[in-house]
Length: 182
Image (cartoon, rainbow, N blue to C red; front, top):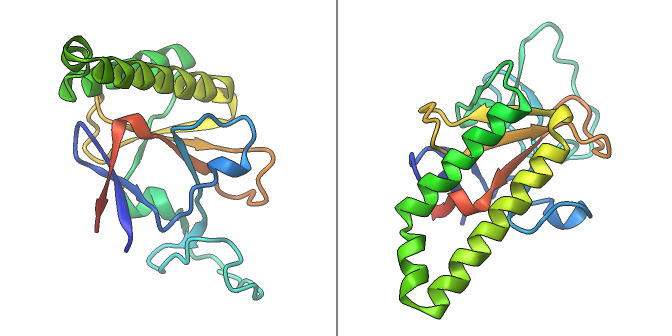
């Protein structure tokens, strides 16, 4: 059963687990960051989610326009001209909104388990943001379809180690996302 990755704040769909998580294949990637490989497809065609999925020769698309399968399917909007400092501020706004929605500070005061959950949340957010900022020069930032600034962000990483060179790997910080059945 396919699960959709959606934003905790806006409820916007960002991706699905039909695009496999590549986190374990990338040594420097922290736990809590979902990474999947996007692909360029001819607009209107159905994506097979993986480049070379059928190991056949790719057909020449000619002059037909191509779109990023994840960006197009989930109607993500690229944040043009966004600097590192602005992204950090926006990401931290998202973290605070998730923290408030999940009442993590309140839960931390109520029990040791709540305190441990809050601490793990903070560590995950810090590790995710650090990874995104470390690779920022090779990234495109996408906002959810509602363009809610407190919502989750998709980070398109042009990973120099990726075998796919015409589409970025798309990353999500899972602390601000939910998985739900489609």
